[in-house]
Length: 138
Figure 1 (cartoon, helix red, strand yellow):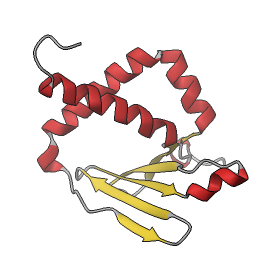
Figure 2 (cartoon, rainbow, N blue to C red):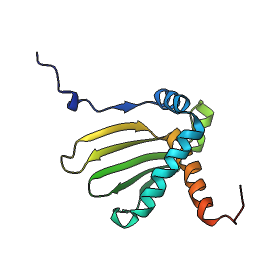
Figure 3 (cartoon, rainbow, N blue to C red):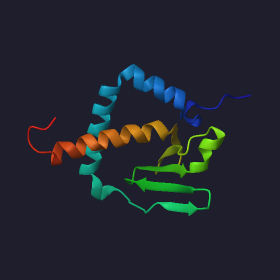
């Protein structure tokens, strides 16, 4: 039997792996570098397809898909909000995402995004503060 090509394996970043990555890099450095990527993407804002999120509401909660593309890469985030989950020991919000090559349609990455969303929120806040905070603020 022939082994699949390394290209056939879609990398998966679990919650555990994401935490290990953040801790290995260091939270401060991770946020600083993430903020730089976010700032660069804001500069490329006009290149992005900003399709509105698709929400599916029920009496128990909401599930949303958030797609975007810059014409080269396509990504989406799946996120839910289910307040009753706490009763069963589950998180009320969880998220994962997929990043795919537009040219081939091939998925390049499947990753947890619950932790990543919190980090992205912090990094985006830092970018906003850089431009909007009064001079001399820290």
